[in-house]
Image (cartoon, rainbow, N blue to C red; front, side):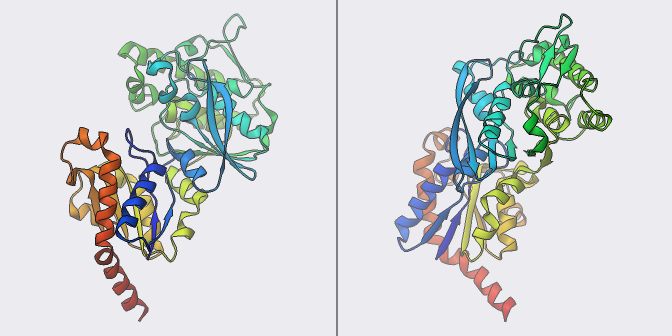
Length: 395
């Protein structure tokens, strides 16, 4: 029997590759003759890099500026002339020194430097996965990392971080890396928040990054100023000015503290749903063909999952190939009817084995292996109905 394991991470517990490996271990305990293929996936945020590496991309390391300026060794992935850059590895909450939040100072500069590293590697196609960012700088730092200059009223370079953007008076794009003109950039993101306003980057995500109400107000002013000043950049053509103007009000511009805005406005990035991008570069739809069962999942299977998160995207791809899918999660708030409507034959949750959520997080690996065994024992009843339906359809 041929099984494909294509999970997202269990946030706070296990990475997607770890989830896949542990589930495989549980399955093979029950039936060592199973053929198992592990394809870690993600929705464009944290874990996108793992998905790329698990699909044959080569991991590379570049030393770049961390969120508050300290050097960090950030990973990106290359396959041929294509690269996957994950913002979180350079500008994410997880790489803040000591985990100390810095809502006004954190910058996306390292992400720009990581993109430059991909250009140095000869890549002309880049997937930029955003999520887990520490900054709310509208992507100003990313642009600076790619050669742009952000200047104050004295013609001096602006300090990094969203807190200084209110002092911005000019953006000089003349030094922007020329290679960007011939590079196709995809912004992989499911965030549909705009740059500004009550649903914007500062208001919605700022508090998660440590911003006080006053900080949120200051960051909002800075982002608004950046959007206005950027339209007046001297080297922009009229078409490019229109692109900047449009990007400032486009859904998704608020992704990663406004990095989505700068990526679309200046780098010409095209925004696509993260799960679609990941399924494409992992080749998951093709690799599912002929499988008997697909196992996917994430830490929490809930209402948000139904909005196009990783497990549902995987289930939809499997359904198109006529392969049944089960979901594995830490916990679920979905009814059996919702699980079925989302495309899953069944869901399995760690909380079925251990009701205490804190213990589930702490002992996720042990419990997940036990769920793998449980799925192994249930394989026939999971797979046979689908086979019967297929035989009746083909007959």
